[in-house]
Length: 141
Image (cartoon, rainbow, N blue to C red; front, top):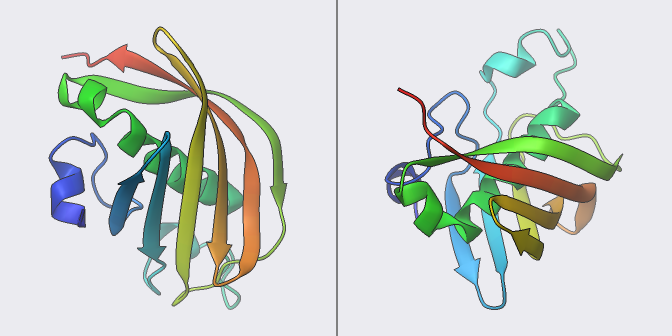
């Protein structure tokens, strides 16, 4: 699905929507992709003259990819929130102009909590990996 299709159920919007495309795979797996633009707001101060995508943004990309796994719940108006990030490691810097490929796999779902294993890569190089705990909450307002 493209970004417009993602917007139909994902509550995120630019500049925080960090998926250009996403794909739901078999057996509780999803993949996503995002091309890091030169003018990203988070690159303006991280770091001037040497822009590097912040690690927390890579984690956010992985979490948004996990949103594809719970698309039906998001379409009901639920919002996915981080409640835990475990065993996260950063292996490679991501620079403007690079396309980050994300992958996640559902480890466990219990009620409104989901635990996923996820990673982000540029080409064959691992940039970030870890486990992420998300809670699906009712939208306020």
